[in-house]
Length: 552
Image (cartoon, rainbow, N blue to C red; front, top):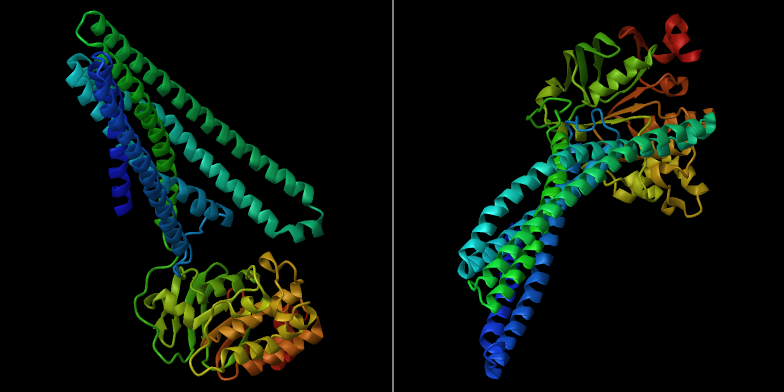
């Protein structure tokens, strides 16, 4: 706010100087040129020179403060949007593609930030019009009244003309954001599309989306051009009226030659502030449209309700579900003991997805409750819960950077854990990600590319599992961590997982026999409920449904 106030003050100084220049020129004509007084001519020329120096520096400093204020406002908005997207309660991404959120955090935030510069420019223009009106009133009451009465009318007409631009600008940003989201979606799935031979269909899909976005952009551009053109035409007519009235007053002898020059100069100067008002109207229209989109994200309803209780330390890691209904879960009762490696096999993938959403608190059950160490998750602070219970999805993303940076991923090891470098090495060895590093040209320093695209599917899975293991949460839930690796590697990963997580609550949601074989206990979810329990060997021998789900 200080920068905006400073920029506004300096801009007003600049506009005051700009408005006084034609007045000073009129004074020079009347007192020096008409009177043929060389001394006064030199004096007033010196005053003009000083005025131009003041104009130059006040504009430069004011514009700098304004631009910085706009950029800082946009930056603050971007941080707020990213903070809302990363909020542990979720919900901001609901119904939006990742590319759409990126567009809101970049283009929309930039447009809203630019409102600061627009408002400052409007203040500058208002100061210029006010000074001009006062100067014209002192020169001629008629000319001053024309400015004072005509400017509000022009502003009102400019506001009316900006309404279509506001509507079309909002539609333009919606379409552009959707096109960005589709593009990001297609790029993320490029390898799959190539494997299916569906590149052409993907290109056609994006082409259709891009055409809709282009049409919205053109409509917005047409609205902006009409708004700008009509406002400029009205402004030009207004300036012509001032010049016409000033000329008639000069012919009648009501104005001196110097006063006429000053009046015409002020009329021409007014063209700048009035054009600025037109630009401000357009910027505010676009800013309002973008602000509405930003507000939708920031005010998005959280996916889960707030909890305020801290997670009790130490976390034992006992998980209990009672009567949980959500998605594929139908009144599920489940007890997952602390400190054990529990396997959960499913006959329906929808049940696994719903269970993971409940445990990761991406969604609250429609009915029933989920508890950690006897405390309902709805009572716990979501951020604290995320630190206690980590759900490692099988389709989690890797980030741009090296393999080592992806394994560490900013996670500090838990208290009492081995030294960070040693812990990272142990986690990579358990997930067999050390073998991935050995196969890369620069080992763990090798970049994995955006989304880990330089790695194979199996390599990505091992790096993701290593990242989850290194985080060392009290409760770790992993989902199908080995679907893309060979059977020999899968068996070794299973043993590494069991050894690394010894004594801590670990839940493996999978139908992999190799992983289920190393668990302490296995639970089969069938039709959203517990269908069978026991060891893997016992269930394979005694339960036909389990054999079908796991061995088929």
